[in-house]
Image 1 (cartoon, rainbow, N blue to C red):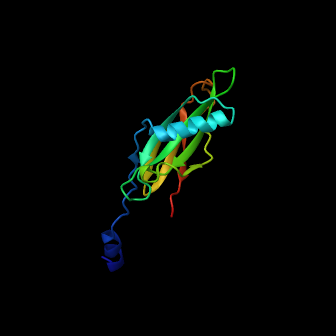
Image 2: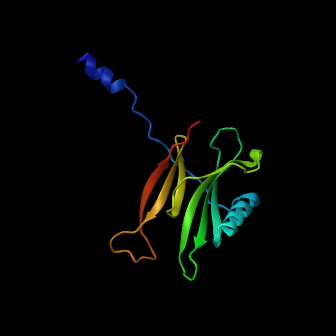
Image 3: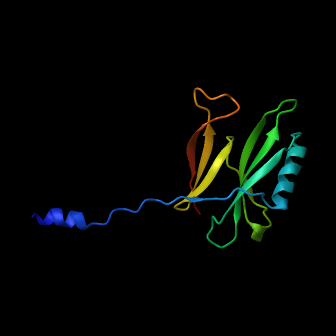
Length: 142
């Protein structure tokens, strides 16, 4: 047997990344109040909000990924905006619109990043009911 082959067999294989699914829940009232007030100030209707708590900074305080829905006037459809809010330790004050205007199906934390799984409309899907999905990765850094 060749020594090179033996050494190659003993090298450890890389571990696969493990996705930690985040639980969708109602965000804290100060976040909802802020988004509702902003919608009113912009002349928009506010239809509701979903949130995913996640410790992005590793400090034990939950930051929030939040998706707010705004209905079109006179219609039965909504458009969404997705935000990151700082945690309770800052009064949820700092926020950023991350520019994702697609509805989230689920959110996973993988290796410190957020994997945002969004609905995708496939060729034979009715417009109401997308059955596909794709993933956008939100890289978290300092």
